[in-house]
Length: 418
Ligand code: AMP
Image (cartoon, rainbow, N blue to C red; front, side, top):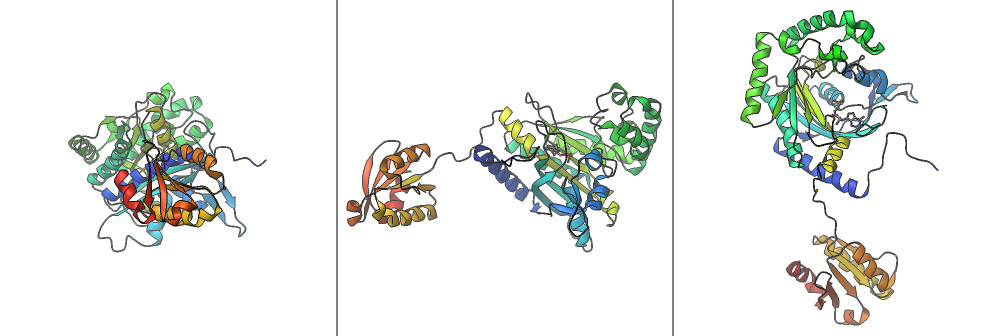
């Protein structure tokens, strides 16, 4: 028997219905915030992700699905959404005549070769947005607000952890201080972090192995190294969040490890018991577009994972209003009524009723059972005798009342009794 791959899963039944509901919420909120939908390819040139996500990141060092295709190209499965969007932005020269920022959202599968555990899979779905072309703190707030409102609409109480990395000057000063602090502790760090100290010390702070160690907890914090502009910008961000009543907590240890982040970084958490991981996160990445051979161009974005969001929704007992029952089950006694049954089924569906029928020639007894299984509100029972006068039997499965109704009046009848 062929089984699914480790860290992958099938989505079906109630889980699938819940995810479709989450999709609807996302689509609705992105429309309100005026982000348009984008799909980028599942696979891209390896170089895009290695450069875009950063050679020293855990994702690139250990987690990307890299392979050589039949044309000898080096290919990588998409581990995150930002690099693909930025490649699209640069490739189409959208920076040429920008009159508005580019605002897009994606909702797609990602691939990382991770050790599977709760909320961590090898194939997973992320929803994310990117706002390219504005350096204004209002853009950062737009993205944080969209993220926060998405969870609120899903019925989840969340809080945003925020921090700032500052501009390049501040970040460099901080980086120096961090290296000075970490170097004497070199022996206490994992092999990867030893290498990171010289290449990108900020990554040491969110290393999965070293992140919780006391030496990391005692490390310098970015706030102490901000220049005046960066500090003002950070204070402005907080003013906006206060104004928009978005709850946040300052977390001076939060540094998203990706090389291209600057200024705002944020992650989204919930207090729900058993959900002790970030649901999503994002921040400003003014350095990435240049890094990928585009022009100097400010940008900010956010991504959330579906797996963790679904876990949080279940843990919080959120009641997702997806349709569980059908409206009508159409039954027939014998073969001779099937064509009319088929016609009625189509007509009901076209008029907005969720309708089911019998494809297995079960006979009336089996059909009654099916109707109950689908929790049908109405049963429509066809028999040749009634059809001679163009009538069918309609039974309200809740009140158990039964009535003969002319086929031409069916829709009106159901509308009235629904
Ligand atoms: P990242 O791109 O690593 O910043 O992750 C953003 C969000 O994607 C996280 O907060 C998670 O919700 C989700 N995520 C990241 N990696 C995984 C994974 N392996 N499995 C499931 N969700 C993930």
